[in-house]
Image (cartoon, rainbow, N blue to C red; front, side):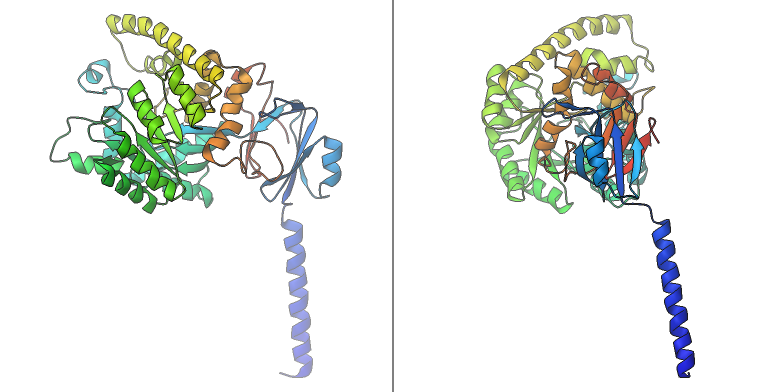
Length: 456
């Protein structure tokens, strides 16, 4: 090739490179977004900034303040989203959910044939499903959560061996849409918890798909290590009257060695005390907690994760759209729902007065007719207000408080510089009307708009 030809080739190559660079610059969207809204609620302080603007760059919050101030610092090519009179909040955090389970309540006659009859038959049907089919269902439920404003979820079991860790990774990689997930892998239980009287020829294989069994301190440590092998984010243990303090303490010690928190399902007084004495990081449900136990939780810095899933018969009311109940069952339900409501109202007041740190989770693992998974989950959060919790405290329970419980307070839970750009917006004032959380109109996760029914 002659010198003239070589120079010609260089000129053509440089010109092509310049053209490509110019096209790339022209076609690439700005990595900055400016969001404006009439109001921005800070759940931690309860303060409202009005009007408000949030500048987002590369998926994180860069600046928060009055629109004139923030807009002055925004790049010229920043995308602007004006949400008008809406109220901005941090993305919601569901501290306790089950995204790979969607239980349909069986007919009354079928339910009465089984121990734990409302739940166990649906759980067994999930276990015998193809893991691939179950994972695809989980992806749909995760998307429905995100579309309702839940941008982070702690998945606490009932996901097969690796369903929630794989769903977490698929969402992180952008393959499917959903909240960022803290995955727990298999729930650690004592034998005989959840499902009983299984065919002995199949029992161990069925249980192995869904649970890891505790039988002594060595097995407790082994169960945690097996979940660690699946790269979980948190350990979930179900405490019942058969679980001893040394067994649970061994599991917690093993988890803490790997810097993993331990969430303990505990409903009755005995199980709650076992969880307290063993040093749990959070106690899930805790429905029968006494004044003394709540104070112990406060003093030991154990989070109380409230799950008002069936408050005022929430789940039963959904089931009534599908299941025909006998007159006797209806009468028994009417009697029990009033008693249960009074007990939960007292629990909420006990929690508020004690100073214990608290958060909230939906515990949704149920098919709820007429609602998406996200709509059902946000309705559960609103149940806390019906039980007597002030609206601002409910919002804190599923934003700032929940972020602290997860150990992610430096990343999520507030609209502050440096945190992930996870934001939602509602049309009204959620402190004045907490049911606004059931009507989320704008959702952003990692700076990406998931839903916008408000602005442009």
